[in-house]
Image (cartoon, rainbow, N blue to C red):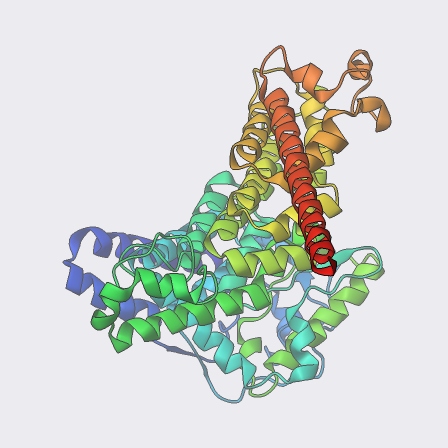
Length: 539
C-alpha cells in the first residue's frame, strides 16, 4: 500500500507538471479544473484505508475486517519503510470510536480531499508530502479560486451535520498542562496544510506549504479582481478604509462591474471569514501551547458517515485529550522548531498587512503579540543559532508589520502590555551595530520617529530610553558592564536613531506645551473681554 501510494503521487506530480508546461491556457484551465474537482467514490474494502492507516497483520484484522478502523489492539509503528518493524511494534492503541458505524454508501471525495488526507497523515514521509504539495502549488498558482471553493464547499457540507454543541470541536481545547491535541480530519485540506506547518521540520516542505497558504489568502492578487485593480493588500469587504473613500476611488469603474466579479468577491470574503473563524487559531497554536499529535492517522472514511462525522471527530478529540493527561503512548509531542515558527510568522506578517481589520481583531482578542515577542528573550546571545536568529528576526518583522498599519488600537495594545520590553532587552544583548537584530530594531524606532506616532514616542522615551538594565533582570552575565548605561548611550557609538527619537519626543512635548499655553491664554483673554463688556453695560 505504501509503495502504491507513493507511485500514484509521483505519477500525478509528473502529470500536473507536464500539463503546466505543455498545454495551452484554455486546455490547462480545463485539465486542472477537471482533475482537481471531479468527485471519486470511495468505499470501504480491503484497501479503503490505505491512504491513512499503517500495515497490520492478518491476525490483527481477521475478526473485525475493517468494520472499525481505529479499534482493537493493532500493532503500530511509525517506521513505514520497515514492514517487519510495523508488525512487531510495541505501541497499542485502545478504542477511540467504539460506537461509530461504518458508512453504508460510498463517500465522494475529489483529488484535493485525497491530497489533504496524505498531508494530514502523521506518518507520511517527505516524498509523499513533497509530491502532494507540488500538485497543490500548481493548482493554487494556476487558480486559487479552485482551492477556496473547495474549502467553502467542504465547510458548507460539514455545517449541515454539526450543531451548536459541536462547534467547540473547531477550537483548540487545551488540558491543564497547556497541551492541545491536534487531530486533523483527513478531508480538511486547509487544516491539513496547517498540520504540516505545525509538525514538519524540513525547510523545503515548509516553504512550499507557506507559499500555498499565502497565495490562497491573497484575495487581491493580480487577475482575480473583476475590476482589474487592487493594491494587493486590503480585502474588499472588511479591510477597506471607508466606504466613502472606496467610492471616490472607484467612480470611473462602477459602470464596468459585472455579476461574476461581485460573486467572486463574496466568495473571497466568505473564505477569509472561514479562515479566521476556524483555522487561524490552529496556525498560531505552537506559540501558545504544547502540541500533541496522534501516532495514527484518522481513517479516510470517518468523515463519510452520514450525520456522524462531527460527533466522531469530537469523540476522538475528547478521548485523545484524556490520554494526554495520562501520558498515553498513542500521542507524541511536537518539539519546538525555529525554522517552522519563522515560516508561520511570515504568514502572519502577510495577514497583518493583507487583512487589516480581521487580523487586528484576532491579535487584540488573543493577545498573540505578547506570546510571540516572549520568544525574543528565550535564548542568550552566546548560544543563539542561525535558526533562532532567523526566528527573532521574524518576530521583529511581525511587530514591524503591525506598526506599518498605523492603527491606534495596536498602539494602545503595545503600550498596555509593554510589548517593547522584550524588544529592547534583546537590543541590549545585541547593541552592536553589525548585526541584523539590532538593525531591525533601530529601523523600527526610526519608522516610529519618521511617522511621528506620538503615543509610542512618549512610551519609548519615558519608559525605555531613560531606564538602565538594572531595573530589569539582565539577559546574560557578560552584560554587567553595560547595566548602568541607557539604551541611547549603548547605541550612540553606532547609530543616533534613539537620540533622534528622544529629540522628536521633546519637540512634540514642547509643541504641545505651547499649544496648551496659547489655548489657555486665549481662554483667559475671552474671559477678560466678557468681563469688560459686562462692566461697560453696567455703566
